View (cartoon, rainbow, N blue to C red):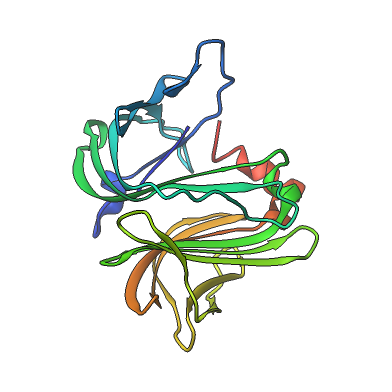
Length: 255
């Protein structure tokens, strides 16, 4: 179970928390409508997804582990019939389950309670990410016409794949035309990053949320589908994840 909370500026540390802990699933943990992971659980209640969190923060630089407890309720607004392989061999599939959604967040352990727009997807495959991918960049932005999703992938075999979609409020899916990849500045760990935007436009990072040796997450400002947007963006470097020193470092970020 991974929980990441990035507190509001100017003092984000006072309202931030990060937890990442793996658990083996016991008989009965997995059900038709949900799953229990350690002390936390998520389940569908009708047309809403309820996530009850009971975690402790992962210590980064300090030995203190703080409680990270609360509830997230996700209300999907659009559920497109979209499931596709994102690599040529079909070994990794992607489902944007609720690309347009609303979230209610209540985290009393951090003194936070808020609501806003949300996104929910899933990825799965029979091979691990470092085996299947050399690099990927993903982004999601919300506009008045729907959700704009992009995936730029380089597989471990060297093939390049690009996906760009618009998902309307009624769930209709259309491909975004006239886009092109543009470089973003390298991360602090020197990860090369790119963003797919409308051709002829640039992109820039407005806030770095995660910065690690094989993964980065940030907010970027760009133009997509004819809209000026602030998008969530991530980069994953599978070639870095294959290196032993990176695998060693992950022990300090997760349990």
